[in-house]
Each structure stands twice: as C-alpha cells, then as structure tokens.
Figure 1 (spheres, protein in one colour):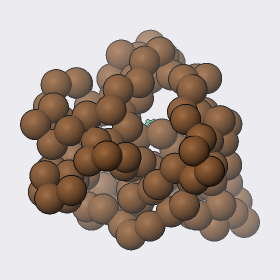
Figure 2: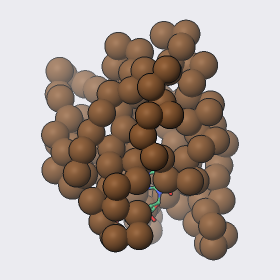
Figure 3: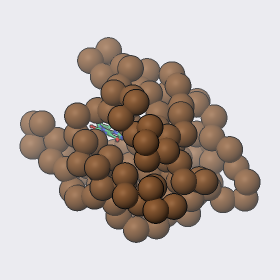
Figure 4: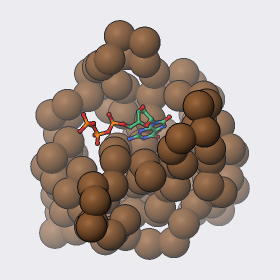
Length: 128
Ligand SMILES: Nc1nc2c([nH]c(=O)n2[C@H]2C[C@H](O)[C@@H](COP(=O)(O)OP(=O)(O)OP(=O)(O)O)O2)c(=O)[nH]1
C-alpha cells in the first residue's frame, strides 16, 4: 500500500517532483510513500510528511479511488491533508515543489497512476 497526501492550502494543492529513481525522476506526485508493516495509513502519512517536507499535517477524507499500480502489486490511496501550526513544507527529498490551483493541475507531468486522483481533486480545488 502506498499512501499520498493531497495537502491543500488557499485553494491550491502541493505537488512534488521526484528526484529518484531515474525512471520516475522529474515526475510529480503527492508526498507520501509505503505503509510499513503494522503501521496505519494515517501514521504512514504523518511520518512521510515529516520526513519529506518537515511538516505536521491533519489527515482528512480520501480523494479519488484506489489506484492499482502498473504491476498490480501495490495500491495508491490519497487523502486530503492540511498543514498544522503554520508549518511550511521544505523539499527535503523532492527536486521541486509547487502549489497548484485547479487550473494549474495539468501544468506538471504527474506520475501516471495519479491521473484519476488529480481528476477527482480538480472540482474540490475549484470549489475552494
Ligand atoms: N508518494 C507517492 N508515490 C507515488 C505516487 N504515485 C505513484 O505512482 N507513486 C509510486 C512511486 C513509487 O514507486 C511508490 C512510492 O514509493 P516510495 O519510494 O516513494 O516510497 P517510500 O517513501 O516508502 O520509499 P522507500 O522507503 O521504499 O525508499 O509509489 C504519489 O502520488 N505519491
């Protein structure tokens, strides 16, 4: 299971560019990663947001559907999230970060698996 956080602030979502591995470097994603054995999805998201962005977040509702990844061995689930305590993300592991409005969602090359999640996010951002 891979979990991602769609962190929303002022009607924009935080998109992050992968720095590695080479096959996916330069593709954009939601911060997150693998859920470790015995870990809850929420705990994995809190840990990954701290490790990758040095922020504390509150996890909200799911966004979009479960996306089965190419090889069928893992599933991507994305949750809405909000920054806490005024924390501001730092790209500790990503090569770039951008806050995207609904109109800007297609301005970065997302990882292919993220397409249905990005589509589900668009109306949420537009309504914000
Ligand atoms: N975090 C994240 N990963 C995604 C997204 N979309 C997508 O296809 N993936 C893929 C990329 C990777 O193959 C996998 C996540 O693995 P990862 O390497 O980031 O996980 P991790 O942080 O736990 O890394 P590691 O400890 O194994 O190095 O999921 C997304 O939006 N966010």
